[in-house]
Length: 225
Ligand code: ADE
Picture 1 (cartoon, protein in one colour):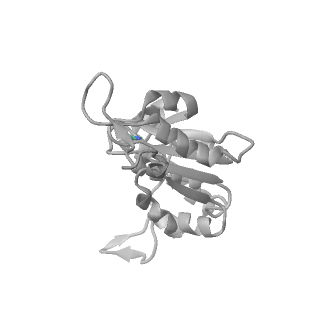
Picture 2: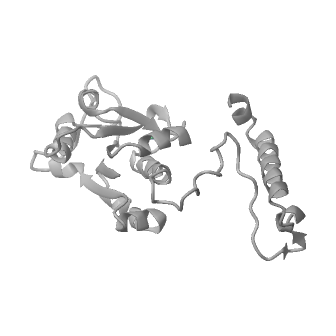
Picture 3: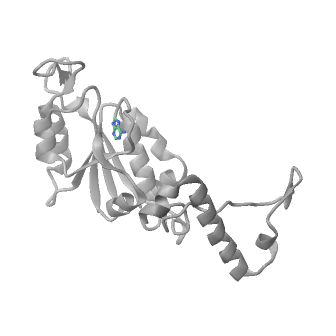
């Protein structure tokens, strides 16, 4: 999967070199390009923003600068990649949305800052608006990283086969609790069933624990499923 990122803060994406995403990048399963929107400013001071028409707080990112950056990415392509704008006004990111995005070959993530981006360029290039939750961040970079992380889990070859299957939310439930050695920690023993060797009983226990946890912590998930 190809992921191009349009941002004013390219250094924030250095974390993509670490951990599971870093390995997928090295194996060419994920290909990233981080493009600095400021490089596409046409004025000599490299301004990227200006005062909002109609007044109001903050600055607005100029449409021409964003368009130039977008054009740089698409100019040699014979297709239009899906442009995703990170904004608190977008559709809330869920596992289901992440899976849909993971099926796309090529996406461009557009990160805003300040009071936003001029609406005209958004209307022209954006295909999908995504929010990572009902709170406002100072920019779209952290949301883009969150999106990349969760989408990557559903890209074939990033995780071990099946690792994304039994997780929290996959079946509309929270995941059961996990244990590892030692068998007794601070006087508390691992549940007997998990060391019984009876796989039928173990699966039953996991399912019961999932339902119990979901009832206790996220009853809304059971009601909406
Ligand atoms: N930009 C600022 N806040 C955001 C949010 N919650 N989701 C996506 N992009 C954002």
